[in-house]
Image (tube, rainbow, N blue to C red; front, side):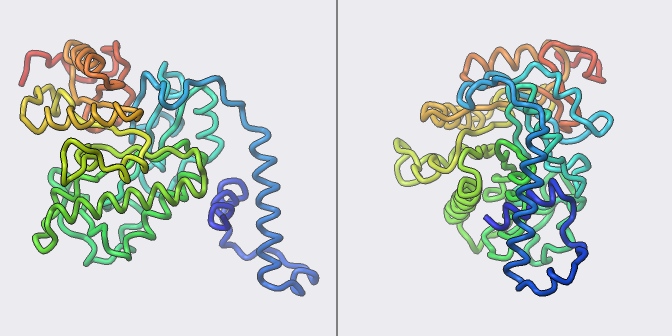
Amino acid sequence: MALLLLDLARQTCGPINEEPHLNREDLMLTAPAKMQLFLTAAIATAVASWATQPPILDRPGFSEVASWAYQLTGYEGEALDVLASAPVDLVVIDLARDGASDYFRRDEVRQLQATGKHVLAYFEIAAIESFRPEWDEVPDDLKAGAVDGWEDEQYVRYWDVRWWPFVRARVQQAIGAGFDGAYLDMLTTYEEIDEPVIPIQRRAELMVDLVRRISGLAKDLSPNFKIIPQNCPELAINPHDEALFNELYLAAIDGIALESPFYLPHNKPCREEWCAENRRNAIAIKGQNKLLLGVDYVRGQQRRSDSYKRQRRAGFVPYASIVELDRYNPENDLSRDRAPDESTRR
């Protein structure tokens, strides 16, 4: 709880690592008493701040979300105005507007929520990008090679105890900023990392353990905080009996998001068997009263419309954008494609 209050203090009072002004009475207090006074002041300031925030309008229950948007960079004017005006029930944004340390503030998240939206914080749990503020702090022997297609990003050995503090800090940052939940990326590390010493099934178990630990921490601090992992729906299937679920994993998540349910970047139909398997597993998770989000990577109105149609028919809450995720792409809007219609291209 103290960590959460310190996060709230940062959100409402500003940095806390500056030396405060102390009077004679302060100097006579013990360290625990000083901390208690500081936390009391932080709570009072937070309450005063929340009281001035716009109220959250009626919004659908989390399980009733029917539309969403997913944008990780390019926030126009360093604000969330475009997303705030989007006719969707849920948005996913990065923890920071610059992808680094310029974190979204509680009042900014609240203003987005006030338009009737659930707001999830995106962060990776098994990889690290070079532009993140933690990059230099992550030990070199935790980094395990470049992520395919993203040369400024490294897989990490996510089972190492030294990695957990970085993940924990991201969870605490999201809760301190008032997000409704976390959108967890790079679970695919368990499959893609070059780590032959640890069998892939064991790596899958370790990924499940990490997601469960994240969920436990988050829900201890904020019981209604939602956990949405992206990809790897097979983690919810019992590895010893495919007819059964991994109940421990299911209990830790509130839904799942799946990239490329029907289209690979860009406009390439996803016809491989693993695409069909991913859809089957994701839809099975939805059948356990979990939210199911989908995002295809397409250009052109024809392919976008087809993606939405296919996703809805399969039971996904659909979205379609470009792989850079640097803009909001409405379901029916040619103006933001910044590319000619490629619906006939492969």
